[in-house]
Image (cartoon, rainbow, N blue to C red; front, side):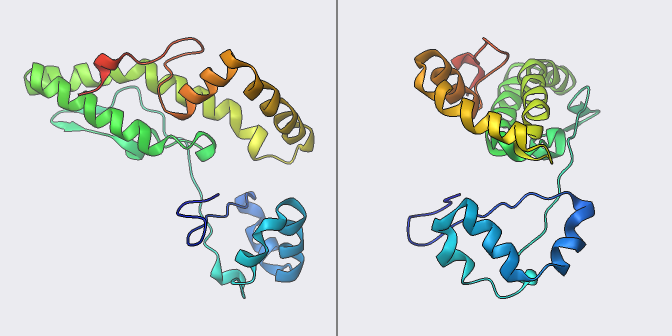
Amino acid sequence: MPTGTEHDLLSLFWSIRMDKVEQWRDTPLDEWKESVLKLAPQAEGFLQQINSHDDLSVASYHDVVMKKWHTNNVAILGDAAHALSPQLGQGVNLALVDASTLAQCLRELDLPEALTSYSERRKKHLAFYQRATRWATPFFQSDYRLLGTARDLSFPVMNSLPWARKQMTATMAGLKTGPFGILSPDNFV
């Protein structure tokens, strides 16, 4: 995944279950590189920089689901409030909407009411992304090749349909509140 310009930065995500990390570390690095190149031949230059399994970081994540995003005088925002599977790439988007919503609530209400309002206003938006990432995770990270094949075949078709493309774009922009709902511009400061 490009994270900078064409010539400088790249992120490579290789998803394996945490209980398989040591098995991966015990696999010769060249075997792993061959597996990557079969899927992404354009990664060859990147892979040449990797000389050891230790050149790569292992990251794990957990879904965080809370009923409210405040307590007493504290508001909880971003991944601390609603860490999700990274498939939809929504961490920063959701954190920014959290901050904007909290600022709006604090301008309108006293602190206790503002925090309650913040949790209420974020509920529908966050619930959609929590369900969507849980639903999408098996299509991106599972041992079922059929799900990955279904993803790879359906995404180009959906992208060619104007309505579906619009929904996919709104989802990736962090604007969805449900299958057909989109955040109102009033939600932003």
